[in-house]
Length: 63
Image (spheres, rainbow, N blue to C red):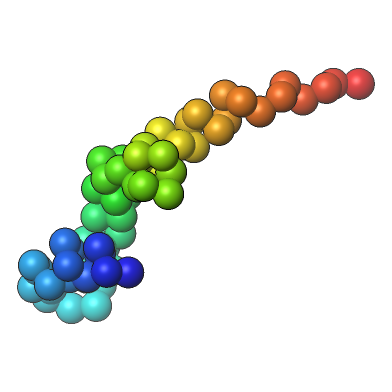
């Protein structure tokens, strides 16, 4: 994805594959999911979109 490449990969130097895997994973969780808004999600972060979606789900019916 362009955003990850431009904001995480191109701006960093990684010691090895394990370092890259961990730091890119943190970028995805901390920045991409929780801070970066997405036009396809009505300008919400993925975390906000998911929280809104979950609140709109019907309660399960217990039998």
